[in-house]
Image 1 (tube, rainbow, N blue to C red):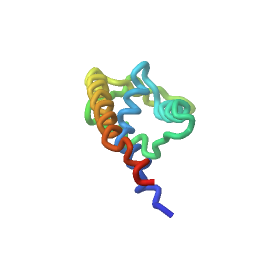
Image 2: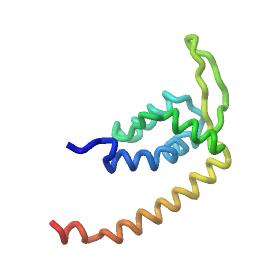
Image 3: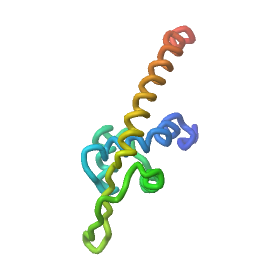
Image 4: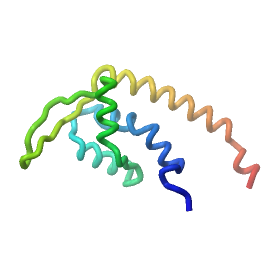
Length: 117
């Protein structure tokens, strides 16, 4: 059985999780659980990230997101994250690059699978 931490799916999620978080935060600030719930809902349960807070902290360090506000709910602090102008620019540029690379990849492998079955 293949180690799921080394699967294509795991690598893909690690590579794209920052972009997913930025896209989710595009319209409004959200707190961690809300971001996770949106990810799950938008992907119909297929895309989840077990290390969401690591992604959030990295995006903060890169200044792509910031804490919009913090409130205390049931005795616990809840921080709402929002995308910054730098985060919007990064996401826009990276999605364009992703689209271009996806098209190149598909043209490279087109017909390859059928020829090897």
